[in-house]
Image (cartoon, rainbow, N blue to C red; front, side, top):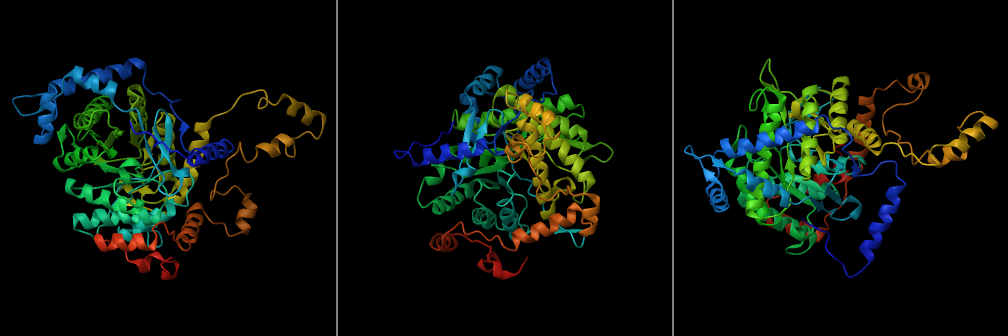
Length: 520
């Protein structure tokens, strides 16, 4: 597992201690504990696990790249007559037992954004790689661009309840793989101080992006020692085939000592069994196969147990992210991840609605809450996504930030102790004014016990009407423009920025990264 590097100076430790003390007084904070919700019985989990091991041992995974085959055969794996790679049960169980249980991703410029992944700690991150962005005024989706990604990064930089920025969209205008990877990485570096995740499509481009990240930190090897980003990939094509390019990316990130952020998304009724338990079996087997890849390349190296079971609308065969089946599958997947005690990610909040409307609200709220309460370390796709992951919305991102705060408050739960049981406060109210509005306890707790939304409207109906009667979408639209019209952070100094641009084909124009550009 990766650990915090030791420091001779106590400065960083002092900052961490101060931050923890400040966190203790916050209503919500990153890393609150999940695991309260367990949709499967213990016996259910064991049966799914045992059947997944049967799948790996008896059916195996096709299309293993030669380099992976060689490593696997040395460890006792076999090829069946059809060339499928079979993983012995004892080997898989041994790898699970010795796999990394946690890892850190570090805030590049601010330790407040360090993310400790593992256990039952819950963090919320964007993700998605949509290919369109919602133009709210036109109510149409347009192709996504690199500039959109930079703007999404700047927006998330100011949204408290989104803890990590995962690549939300694809820069559809950039065809060259290196230019796309470098520009995506640069847009995240420039736009947010939070940790982030990006995808790299070709293994040969992983090392150059590591060089870019080293330049941002000011020295060779610094990124590997203190990673501030994870590298996403999808190494499995369901059902049970290795994806050549993505598997090569996972092997290369592992070889270089980086965190591979895996997503395995078998789709119930299409690329996985229609039975939800069968989808869990197959997706567990496929996700365990990626854990095997990492541990064959570098034993004990951390990776995400990226189990993302998806669902088909069986009337059409198309992906649907907003149904109750998706919500329960995601929660069950996180319960299984907790059974393995592996750092895990899952998709939730993948609404099928095309607008940030009531449908989006109930689909996102239910699925995100269930995944978080089940203990998802990374709850991904949880903000901004629309149209079954095909589109992303700035306004939805702001609305979803409020929703995530509410989910975090549910994670925190209710503290029961002598003070919070409130016997003295009840006695004082009964003997005194007959209410608690001005009591010492109320004044003390109003900023530490209660979370207040940023844009959700709690005013009376009359006050709301007198002030224009805006709905939440209008409020979100205004908030987006407030942030993106003014928040142009400077997270890369001039010299470093120039050096990166001189070496890499960065397609983000400096003129578009200043408030004077007038884009918002």
